[in-house]
Length: 153
Length: 153
Length: 153
Length: 153
Image 1 (cartoon, each protein chain N blue to C red):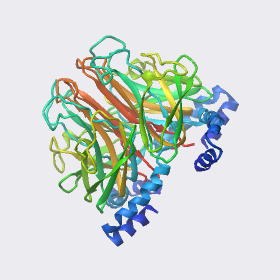
Image 2: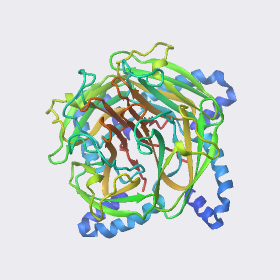
Image 3: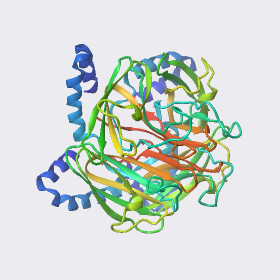
Image 4: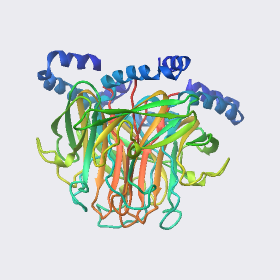
């Protein structure tokens, strides 16, 4: 299908690119992403340097809902030495991004700093999930980020 | 198919590797990558330390068009509290790399620093997309990078 | 199937989201992840700055077992100039996370610092694997992280 | 198939785990990884702080060949303003890891520092590829890493 579209585009020349894209975007808004995600790494650095909130050490999950329906999201946290906690519930409006900080999670409970965890993110519509940490425990901050693991269910 | 090629290679011995590779490369130039990508994390650090432009804090999307056709790319940005903005349009020549800095986007509008966003990248031919940030808000820079999420449409 | 569920959800309205999620979670606990993973990068920084153990330079593999069965995991290390070493064996209880530091591996042997390696992680049930390094060789720590490569066997 | 094996394992109890794994590893050594990879981001920082070679700013591609056959690898670099350069050829012995620094590439030509590029990695057998950068342009180093994009050919 992809090859067909591409070939079609080239036969007709660049002038066709715009309507071609318009169709693609409509399609993407409905579909881009997955409904099941996991982040194996999780850790809230216990202290920080620099001005809050920007430079507060934080563990974040960035979520894109590019679709036309609200995303109802449930995040469950898995720990090394206790049972899972959750779900933490969030709603993301259609065509919106949200950068959630685990530091701010408080229902059903807050997350202890300096405690390793993992998380599973479930949505009722496709979303895209990325994990980012800003660690400012020392005077200069460090960053990490990765697209989360997308489950196949 | 892959197994068949590999097995075939070993039957014939290492001497066959070169033409085998030549064929592979022709195939890759046409196909490597996807046409739909998303980056859930997006943030332009509001200030910097160190000599510009190298050490200017920046959010970048690195794109490879290894194919034989120009890539017509449209990037749409999704925000937390306003409607999507875009498309931002770029063309990448065949067999070329481009490292685009969100900091420099200006049509249809510039991107506010210190504002979370996500992005969707669409191309009319397969490309490979990677997200990188250099954060030099503090005296020493921090880096993050991840291959973007490749949609399946 | 995914589209069907989503469509179904919207016909019935948001009130259906909870039982719908309950079903999803039961499904995830059984399935999220893969059984074969690889991390091509591996390196234990040979020295550190800052208070141990938090700021000790370390190479970590974070593993989520969201399932209902214990995960029996075997990690094999591949080196540049010697034969593979392993398996290093670990068990992760059901619905638990573990953040393993390669620095602490000692059976069948400890891992030499300042020595490049790669690793393959195998589990008898699906898991999610993420690779993280904290490098505090210099006064300020640096971080990297990426979801590992999930094999398809 | 995966579910069948897992179920089978639990019926028989933990004692079966070892032969079960032995079979898995034989399978992995033949198959884990892909033959076509791409890294969209590429940049050799033009200067460094700290003792060489450890702290020399570098751009690295880490490759795992967990298989039983040597991997013949060809890397082609794509630039923003000139034609692709390559292939750079490497061989990785069976069951070995290699951490290659782009800084050291010299045939067909060296790679200019401070110049954006992308790369495509092709192997005649399955490999796993990860991209890592150590940037020590400033006094404290920064790190980034991501599993490369695996093509589907």
